[in-house]
Image (cartoon, rainbow, N blue to C red):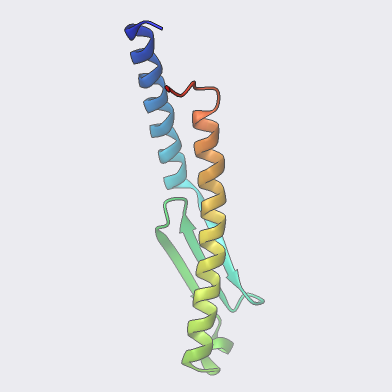
Length: 99
């Protein structure tokens, strides 16, 4: 493979990855704990967008709040991880990797 073709492939890959990162920045996932005790909206880049805490959880005390927030965060992060895998996989699909 000649150097010009390799450079063009690198540029195309860079463009696709940049577009994928932009898409992830605009992607919103919801992490939910329990039956909606805590809901976390997170971007595909792990930025916290919004958190809603049900007043019933507040009434149960700080341990309940902490547990629910952590569960909602883990759920949102798992969904963001899946979105990242999907979007970045699509961006790099079919691109030969140098050896």
